[in-house]
Amino acid sequence: MLEALLGGLLAGTLAGSLGVGGGAITIPILLFIFKLPAPKAIATNLLVVEATALFSLFFHLRQGTLRKVGVIMGLSGVLGTIVGNAIFFELAKGYMLEKVLGGVFLFLAVLMWINEEGQEELSLEKLVIVGFLAGIYSGVIGKGGGSLAVPLLVMMFKVRTKEAIGATAASTPIIALSSLIPKALSGLVVYQVALWFAPGAAVGTMIGSKLMKKGSPKLLRRIFSLFLASVGLKLLL
Image: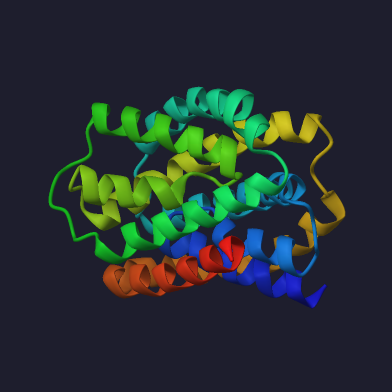
């Protein structure tokens, strides 16, 4: 299970540095190394995301980079996950779901590459709109919504990157849990695999939160973008 421990470390670092849940790392590992079907990989990933997101929230809170207003985004995201779970996830199950995942990863790669540093403040309407969209995305793709929320806040609403990451760190545990529950009740979560990711995730989120505080957001986005593009192409081809 070395792959899962290393995957947890990478997912945690991603979660801490970009405010996301780390699904961009975990889902490919579950698909390509553990050979899980796409619906089970998505559901299992959500349990990993929930753990990494909670670790990330703790470290961001401790170092003062958490934005508690992100809870509003998380609550709005709960409504989105209901729509995503009930409609789109069921429609996309099976072979088509891998193609959907591939397309989403490529779309996110473009967003993360081209977005520029924003200058605007967070506001209620921005948090509600982005939270709802991130919730739909989480319900279908099985991620915490952060990899969509951060680019949307920065690109569409021109919010400063570190503000967007701090708010997303607060919203991701709420959105991920809301998306996880119906999938877990359907028996899609492979718990014995997910638990191997936890130790690495704990260490990774601590590293990632420090990188976010001291590092260059642009460099982190570019690295993440290249990784997303490579995964997206592998799923589509």
